Length: 217
Image (cartoon, rainbow, N blue to C red; front, side, top):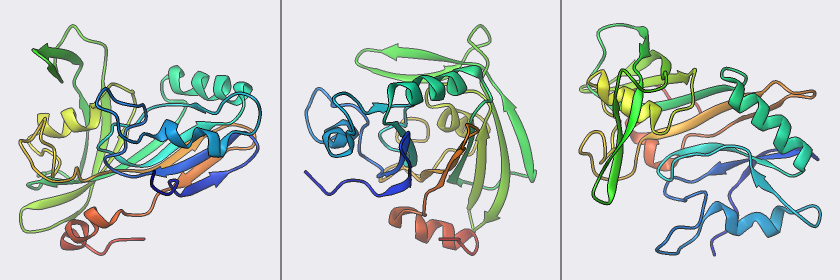
């Protein structure tokens, strides 16, 4: 098993780890490592820890782990309340939007075909809302910041593709190859005291971001 993911925030209630792209949060049918493999390392009592939320396997960045059951319940209340948690994602996308910012309000439904599935626009589906803004641009790519207001599966990936700017490396929504260029950059749980963390730019995204503009660490 590889070294534990880096810890971005730590107290008696929570950890926020820097999940690498490609590492699933749960064990898969085919086996291999997952975030749950590291739970014994982080355990503080007889039970736990627990995932407070989820990140796609292909997404890198901030992932909240609850160390106590009371902390898990408090975090879940915020995540399920819709807007209780502040989340920011960075992505490198194909093309450059004409506007500097916008709001995507496009309901999404899960469509299964054979053994594969994806999220597709569906007016009858639950709401899916994502704010975005342009942070930089390259020759035919753009650095976008996404702030989801809802927590639908693959929401940012599906919304980026829906506005004509799929994320680099997205094989599901953009026909891309390589590693997905999507980072869960920042998270804030407004608890008392608050839980806040910021993930560094992963190596696989750095060159693409630098081609758009100066990139922070």
